[in-house]
Length: 329
Image (tube, rainbow, N blue to C red; front, side, top):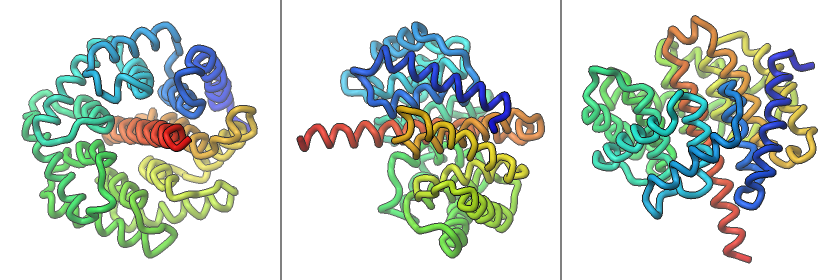
């Protein structure tokens, strides 16, 4: 049975989803509506439909004609800004400034550059040189590309920005990422883009030994299987998020299982099990990182950004799949 906090989040997810569905059902797929609703749930932010529409319209009116933020992504970005900042419109103007600097620095325009801009905006220090940080971010991205050319894409931009925080040479960073990739591929995990993403996520647990994080990922994988949580390759990042919080994972996995089961059994949600797992993991992990000891490690903002990047990736995949289906018919 769900504890009181998770029960509230479950009910809020349904309530916000229903409000959004009534307003946006002719504009967005149900899965995207569920993802937008989850931004509020994961961040424990009170939902205001009028505010979301107002901020999403502001975003649309202040980007270029061909920007992905003019379509479905504007709702997700609006939700992210509302849930994190008191002045979401002002913060969007600031985000666009970071976005333009990333593009000037060599990153390509697109949805993931917007999330990378959000990552940069929330992790840059007051005395940090922005141009140097962007240069390091691009260097990290190129290092990813050199190791796994066909696996690396713009979806890795946000992680490259986060990894650029480390005061390590690019060669050492990539060597450590590759060690994660190799060690995990020799256990429960299959090689591919999702394993590369997991490897990048684990690199952000900078104070832990490689072997400890790999062992924890394997333990999480086994325990999730034992609890009959279906693990697909696209679920690997969720395992990474659980591993980063370094807690008694049995409790967290049980909570994820209970929330996931309730969502899967809910009418309208039963056909979006991958999204339900993302939402359940995000809710449980985010509630855990409110702990003082985790906030002090600096992981809180990092984990939030990973969740946002995954959210954007899922929405983009859903929209692309829908567009392809429409075109073929």
